[in-house]
Image (cartoon, each protein chain N blue to C red):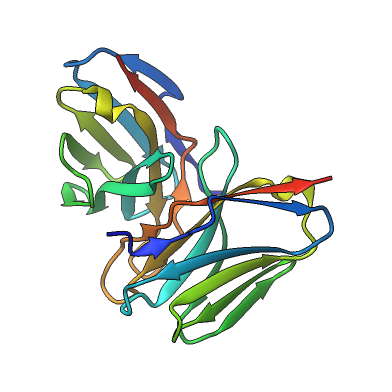
Length: 113
Length: 113
């Protein structure tokens, strides 16, 4: 079974702090994704990566950056956390461009005070 | 501009009856569609998919119907079980050349025992 793990289930940070969310997948997937889920808005794509060191902006990249130095790890960085970044963050991976099913991690509930 | 819409935020159904969850899309370039199920405190899990060359796909109690002319898809669950209570997201993708999905806002299904 594919396993996608996220470093924290719950995180509380203060406004202005730099926040790192880590995601690791164990199935040698090429593609990795970061989403945020908010009530009434569904899942919105922040960034995705289709290869090591490669990244593309999703629909809501403002205030976020990402890093993919190794194939199995995809990090989401909030350079200066703000209260409107309080959300559920979900990481996902998929095997390749020809394979559409994405496997999700359990999510990180981030609260910015 | 929501390209994938789930207009019913919630749905309640009696155990044993049929659950019908609906999804509309606006982008005629979408040609691959998926349904995900999400339990609280867990990441979404893949349920069923359909490509635009089909109008129906069935997997056990779950059937997805696609009406391309109406840009509409629906998920039927028969018979509904209490364990089906979850949030259901539909997602759409352009099969050619992109890794991105656009997710709907979700429908919370409650199956009453």
